Image 1 (cartoon, rainbow, N blue to C red):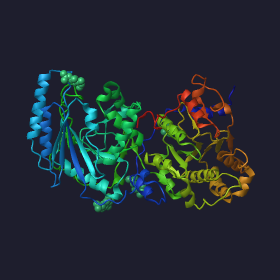
Image 2 (image 1 turned 60 degrees about the vertical axis):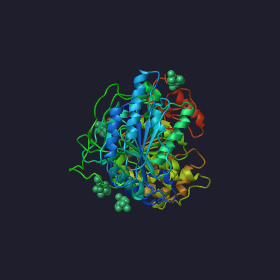
Image 3 (image 1 turned 90 degrees about the vertical axis):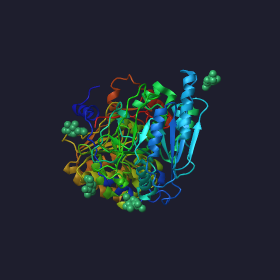
Image 4 (image 1 turned 135 degrees about the vertical axis):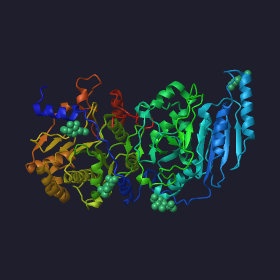
Length: 627
Ligand SMILES: *[C@@H]1O[C@H](CO)[C@@H](O)[C@H](O)[C@H]1NC(C)=O
Ligand SMILES: *[C@@H]1O[C@H](CO)[C@@H](O)[C@H](O)[C@H]1NC(C)=O
Ligand SMILES: *[C@@H]1O[C@H](CO)[C@@H](O)[C@H](O)[C@H]1NC(C)=O
Ligand SMILES: *[C@@H]1O[C@H](CO)[C@@H](O)[C@H](O)[C@H]1NC(C)=O
């Protein structure tokens, strides 16, 4: 079938201009705080990054347990315990639990293994611990590193924290004061608390697991920040998250589900070492939940905990200390000074900055968020109204894969919406957003669905803000996917102001002065005035959508509308049979109509290798891009 030049142009621009890479989106640090702080009547607090926990005064119940994991390395454990005993515990009671794994009698020389165990037991028995109880757990069989970690702790309260110390670590005498200060400031101070944070690591941040383990670069002014990756060389665990992990692990282990997360260097470790290590399990869990860990950046390779990387499970031969131990209070910064949580930066497994908590509840706040998401002055408004959770999550995994970053999600307030926001996806909470412009009371025609009205209203006002700020805007629904690319860019053909793809409900609004004027002055008022517009378009009776309503109205006002109705550019996968080999598929939009059953969509997308969720409905892969 021949295509007209213009149509061809449309295809080329939308679907083939993929080489465009992202602008790295720098956070405006005041943003997440100011937006989360605005009023919010009844969200589930678990989903709000900066929400208050139940009021907890700094409590004498706070305890840190030190859990040392030892095996057969006498030199290592003696260095480790001595460093722990040299720390300043500011008169607190701190208990020491030492777990000594048994040797594996199938490997090595039994006589020398027995001798080594005896020496370790003698040393630990003779070791004086003045700060609390010392408890030694000597195993009867070889448990391995995974069980050593996982069985080291079951928290006895929400005020009990554990510091897990592998025996080849050495800690700074200042470590306890620092950890206590972090927990005081970010766990017990409700205005700085986030339920998304699972712990604190004292090791130096080193690598990016989603980028082949590449070295990590933190900017020089950052001292404390949040990063998803666990830091096993000095990890402090928070009680609730650890229990949640143990239960998750049990479930997956019992069902034979492996912790495979494509794109991660740690999944390669799992494929090689299997159950010898535990980190791939924890990393998969953290990715699923979207949790974060405190890290320090003390410059000059300094850290409060270092690994000597002695021969053992992790190292075939001794590699030496990974960092410089910070033994004294530094002169160049203040160790115990803590910034408010809203000043800290958050990073994902790609070490890309995440901006959690961007929930727009007010028309006037929308501009700040649009500024953080726009790319080349273009915004993609994604309507989530009425779509199933897994369809939305699958779409967002595609956005990650294709590096689509300039979007904002619009939907009704729900647990899902808050979960997406706390994971860093910007959202518009439609009900409150419409309240803020006094548009929530507006009624469409009798029998029209309230969701459709809210959808139309929210899109209308979101575009209004885009045009006020001179941004181009796409409006798309969550029921479409772009197999290959789909960086939403501006359509720059100056002969049209508006592009409409009716069968898909997609619209592109150009920030031309003609559209801006009509949108701001006429269309918004027509939508507000309601009845006549709605009736004329009879959207309650037909399969009308926002794109069509806007186009018909503006066309009647002589805005230059380009209607693109050629279904050959899109494939309705609920109705037509396509497979991966279908010619030209990569340049088409896959979509389905609202009445297609979810399991049919899923099956079709699986066949097309476009289903990107795992059994927990999380993205099955981490995909990093250049930043
Ligand atoms: C922004 O527009 C310029 C000029 O058209 C283009 O070269 C660049 O690739 C675009 N960048 C993005 C991220 O779309
Ligand atoms: C963040 O945005 C606010 C309001 O737009 C502005 O006053 C402030 O200077 C910005 N801060 C940074 C660090 O860009
Ligand atoms: C060695 O360990 C295995 C399992 O840990 C055990 O079944 C076996 O009896 C042990 N052998 C000896 C000689 O102790
Ligand atoms: C809690 O944190 C806030 C914000 O950082 C701070 O202003 C306040 O002083 C802290 N409260 C206490 C008791 O430390």
